[in-house]
Structures are given as structure tokens and as C-alpha cells.
Length: 344
Image (tube, rainbow, N blue to C red):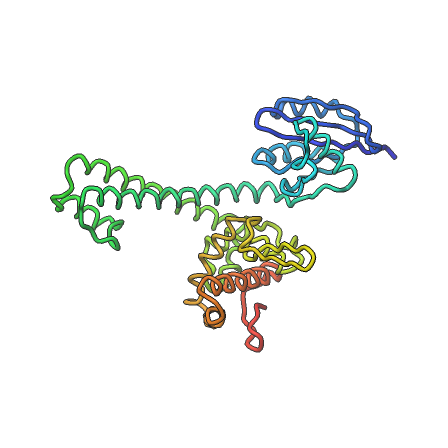
């Protein structure tokens, strides 16, 4: 049986530092290569066989992972917050980081994180781009209101972003001078363009053959619309990676962190270690959920009596996670069992 070689990669925008070690810990090779596919192909031809590699999760990890995966015996991605050996080091550089990642892999101490498939990551990129468009659209709408307020123009805030009212406002309001009109028209055109692009992206994802069945099942849950269903499907990836609902709730950032030492137990507000895209979407869905589901409305009222509206919203969001897990795992439409009101 051939001995395994272990490789630690410290990836950056322009360069990739590597360290290749034997199972005994002896360094076989180390250095740095440019972060291009051509240089990676040249470098892989020099590697001893068989080899397994690990790298830290960064914005550059995806394409490197996809390029190396067909050639490696195993390829792992490390959770950056869990690599304490690197973060707490007194002396830190790319060469040392690559060596420590290699040692963590070799000794089976690597804090591995989930890496979604290429197809899911590509569609997730589209959904996150859609979220960027929505944020820009809101900014432009706010800018229209700000421009009108700066000029002292009175307007109906509820109708401002409707096309007919906006045209009428520009045509009939004498307080809007000629210098302000071009800016207002430009803002309005930008909003319309962003809306059309955002709608086209959502339609393309809803009709995607990889997602259509899964999204339709998830949308049978009360208060779960296309954006919530798409966000869950693309951010979670394989739902089977969560062994319990509690772990899924933690991943979604719907629980606080705990710091305990001796007899002292300190609980913090919502943990910052979460998927922020899922957290935001689920909380927004939870705010609307009591309108669509009597069961969730009862849960909201019960929790609100114990605390406040924020506590009640979080309780509804956690229940939505339980519903989403049940539907996604069972691969069947949502149903409520009247005896105990859980998803089936």
C-alpha cells in the first residue's frame, strides 16, 4: 500500500502557498505558486501519489476546490474560525499557515466545514446577487425620498414608488425644479431596471430543473414563499448534514451563544456564527407567518405573553426551521397533524 501524502494550502487572490508532508510529518516539498488554473495543473504533475489536501474556507476556495477535486484522493475545506492553531500563532505567515493546515489534516484535527456541490454554489451565487439588487433598489427608493425632502416637496410616501403617481408628481408639483427632475428620473429608471433584473433572476431559479421540485414542496409550508424556499434550498444544500433540528437552528443563527466557566453561565444574544442570509430571510418570513398560519399565530401570541415581540418572532422562525427540515427530509408536501401540530 502506497503511503499517503498530505498537503496544506494557504490560498490568496494571487498566490497559493503549499506544504507537502509524509505521514510521519517530514516535509516533502513546500513553496508558493501563482493562483491560476494553468499553474495548478503544472504543480499537480509534480506531486507524489496518492495525496490528500486541505485549505481554509475563503472567497477564493470554490474554484480551487473544483479544480483540484478530480485529482485528489480526498479534499477538505477547514472552518476558518476553528483554526485556532493559526489564529493564535505568535509567528504567522503563508508558509507557516500552510504547514499548520497540513499538520491538522495529517493528524485528523482539521475542523472540516461543509462544501456544497458546484451546481448548488453556482445557483447560490445567483440568489445572493439577487439580494444585492434588492438592497440597491431599496437604497435608490430611499434616495428618491431624500431628494424630495431636501427640496421641501410634499408627497404621499405610500404611493411614491408607483409609476403613475411618480409621473404625476413630476408633471404637476411646482416645487420640483428643473435641476432636480433629471436626478429623480434617473433614480426611478434605476429602480425599474433593478426590479426587472431581480424578477428575471428569481424566475430563472424557480424554473431550474435542479430546484423546481424541492422549492414547490417547501412552498407548501405556510408563510414560505419562493425567496424563503430558494434561500433554504441553496444555503443549506444537503439537508441530511444536520443530524437534528437544534443544529439547523444554530446554523441559521436563531439561538444565542453560551459561555460557561465553573459555576458561571453566560448566554449571549443571537450568535454571530451563522448563515446571515438564512437568518435574515427566516426572520422576515417569521414576521409574516402568523397571518398565514393559525398554528404559528398561536405560537406567536403565547411567546409574546412571556416576553416581547422579538422573542415571539424568533420562536416562529425556529418553528419554520422545524417545518422546513421535516418537508425537506421527508420529500413530501407539508401537512399538520392535529393531535400535536407538527409537520408530517
